[in-house]
View (cartoon, rainbow, N blue to C red):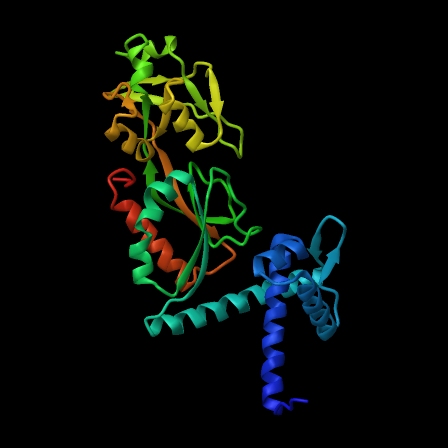
Length: 317
């Protein structure tokens, strides 16, 4: 049997207590053992054992368990508030030491709308990885609005107004839009010389999958504006499917200019009413209030904000 020196045993016990503390805080934040285990990438039985040991050591019950949800007891809430601060301080301490050695490392989970990821961030990642080779990125691209805390996401790009009071929000860019259609569609249709002409055309709608709200484009030219409110002949809730419908000649689409640009340059799409501008969508970088911005997350968010601000299709200016 392997024998440990007493100081080694104390070190192992202290490490286990920290891991149990992390597991407890994650359970409180996501509301279940299963979700916490998935976020921490450990077995559910491991987390259950850690919580049992922690409650036994403290001599109090920390969690109420039901078939639907896990919630903290009164003692658990008080313990969570102090433990969260302690863990955040520890993470910040470790990050500052690593940063002082010019090494930023760790895994960053980030979510972003598909156009932001596909058209801007992912093509530029070689430059980020060359600068920060010790940072591993988990990138999600979709049109859904993720729950950062529940899904263990460190930060996210989010389009539109951010109403969640539990998130720190930083405006970093604009998603610009344009009206487009295929040359074949325009060749067989009435000319579009002014916004009113759109009323006799096939307009394709886009529905945001999270809210079910339909995109309502607004055209501007000087003091004039025109709201496209006509009933779409088809609706789509996926950006790639939506622009594919435009390329197929099914009608007129309102798409992010960054997504449309390659097709405009190749001739697959033609801009409709180029003298008019569509409303842009604000893009924000968000992260939970409950967490300090660690060195690894700060490295990514600063790089991503500078990337967006330096690109003519995305910059706020």
